[in-house]
Length: 114
Length: 116
Image (cartoon, rainbow over all chains, first blue to last red; front, side):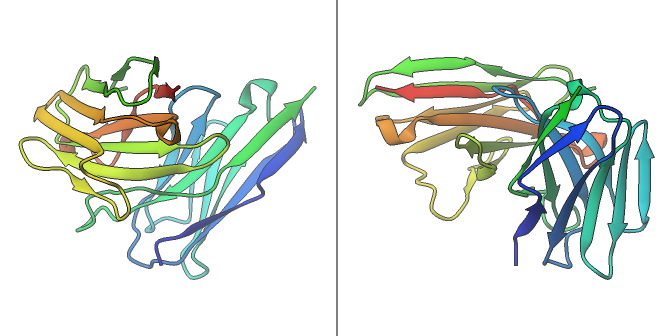
């Protein structure tokens, strides 16, 4: 029940295109859904996060779409750039009564080609 | 944003020795720190949760005598890998959270441990 499933495992997008990564969770007690970006040999960096009381959040080129009834959320990267090439992890946690322990998805390796 | 410093970034040691990894929150007081392990091209697996001044809470399957965690102050947590063996080779990452900063966990840059 603690799993977070992420797809695709890898993704190649042309420069300027839209990158879309999807995640699904099982535990309905999760109430915080962040996305992290990780470059090789570095720690993850928070990109954007959403709480379940909204269906969409946008920050610059990054948008999270959240579907509470389907228990799914996705990351959209608009106008993808070669510098966006990295591994992306979705995560979920329980803020209220859960200590904010993050459960990570399996990761998506994004490559943006020129 | 808040900064978490992790040291060393890379360590190579002989089998049987112990290695200490430090995690510091530089500009905030971390009420909670987390330690993760990551294998190549894999996801982050939570090892333990550490609250300042109390014993760490370990995830199922993580040997607490093998991975000693100390969170003696609000800005410093340490992970000691005792009697390290080649199978302990991995990328170890810490994160820190402060209640006043909301729900965000700030991650360190990670430590690459190689046990020969």
